[in-house]
Length: 339
Image 1 (cartoon, rainbow, N blue to C red):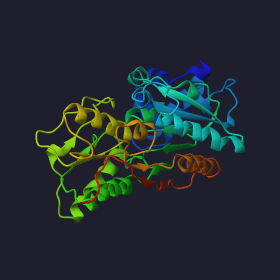
Image 2 (cartoon, helix red, strand yellow):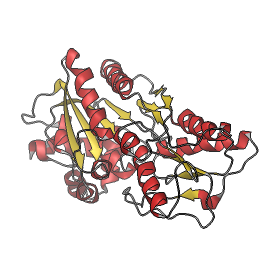
Image 3 (cartoon, one colour):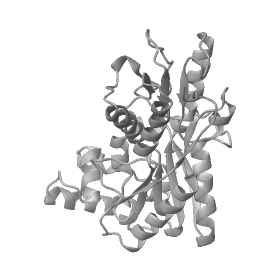
């Protein structure tokens, strides 16, 4: 079977679950030593990954697979060259080139997740390492982590899944955007973002909450607007019955859509409602008015992700750690001046 073998094939052969196979191959708790040995033997027999006994493709330590879920790209209007994750991928290409690294991005589709179908960058077994760009569905992520394969989480982390990761300073970014509004005398502030959707959105909300609590202001539930469904895709924004004076948004893209909705509803920005974004990419500038936002340093994020990957390659047993990349506030015309 060779390079096309999946964990599901091993599971079917042994009559066990794919999750058990994943735990057995990765050395995680949850399977007995006896079952682990059977899993490893079956992997070798079938020719799975690094356990293959045939002629697997030779690993290219300079080839890095970059995996991202489809919804992160679909919501950015399909392959626009200025989309955030495509910009981040481009920075990976640029930063990796001097060291001889080649990046190969593969998009993870919902069908791949539902069917536990492995990405081709893994089944081909040519990768020297992996970069998971943007949050990956946890049950599927467990299938992707392979013994001996260096990997890094980029733009997310998982408290229950220790790994080398690089993120922007989301807590401080959410705090700074909220603080700008408070310093302008605005105290009725809502937040736009599905807090449980990603670690980044939750951390930005934490910064927003911290800034409010410092002023003895408690976040209102009706001013927390959901922006995406369980599948991670954007949903229609619903404005609250009682409007706040401002919204802190979890991204420039959702801030752009919010401003359009507010204007359609008859509100003036920033005279009636102020709006802030996060990221500082295309939506911040095309929004009307342009958005005050928190600029993410994607070049530094890409550089550090590759740096951590090299560390993992050279020292696979080193304890995982995180790198937080600071950003900076960019002031434009979407928030009103202090009275």
